Length: 267
Image (tube, rainbow, N blue to C red; front, side):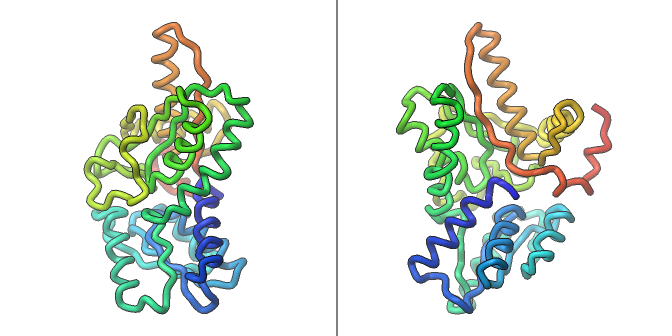
């Protein structure tokens, strides 16, 4: 599972209720892996087929998981990243729109509403409304957008910090460097973040290794980026003599990335 399970479920159920997804339609979308896996898992249980446009350099484990759920994969130019996968996906849909339900996670409000309706209230309840900071990495921006909108309704002073790769070409699968993105998600609201923290791929990988070796938490690279950014916020608070309660999300497990060589690097 991953943080993308909730939006994928909400996108599918909303489309069914609205009549846009019916038996015989193929669920189509672009994904770096996690949302595609969630679509394929849910589709298998509900009797649909899935077609996922995915950059060819996605981790081997993600590709094999998608195939295990029966998804058809369309590999796209790794140099074009998720933008390239989106363009290929749109072309497939344009050629035969009746065959597909184009889930369009980057522009579908059911994405962020899943976190507005579930993740945000859970954070408020589990922290007893005492959190001071929420930190989350940007991909589609669904997690950050949904949670931030819900938190701001309840806690006007909460600081919501977006995390992004520090460059357009990076190795944090599923994340997006918004300043250089050719295809900014339609659900992305640049005015929501209290601030942006940019994290290098190497820093995110190092934190993922550290979480595994020091905390027994085997998490993915984007989760490493979230933890690294949260640590920066904590260090800043400590330097200022302030206290806080920082909430972040460990987006997925590290088992999807075990074929990558950074796990073997020394700390």
